[in-house]
Length: 107
Image 1: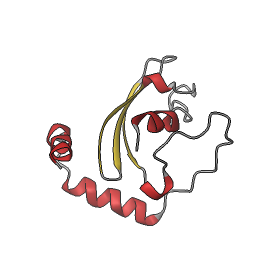
Image 2: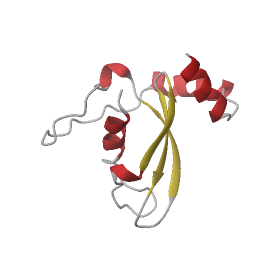
Image 3: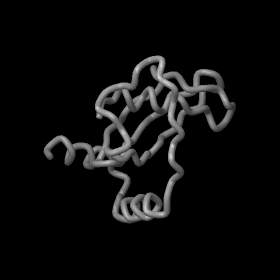
C-alpha cells in the first residue's frame, strides 16, 4: 500500500482538538507492521501533534490512490475482532518503533 494513499485517507479526518481538517502534507507515515500503520499527524490550525496507530486491512485498501473525483465510501465500523487484534499487538509491543520497523525492512 502506498504511503500517498494512506496520507490521503487520513487527510479526510479532522483534528480531535480543534476540528480543522488535516492536510495530507502534514501526515507522515512512520512505518507499518502488516496491517498496523504508525503515523504522525500535525494540525496547522491548533499546532497539535498526534501519533496514530491505525489498523488498515489490505482487502479494504487499494494499492493505488482513488480517483480524485470519486465519492468517498462509508468506512466500516471498527469491529470486535479489530479491537482484539490491536489488543493482542499492544500486549506484546514494547514501544520500540525503531526495532519494529527495522524488523519490517529486514523482512
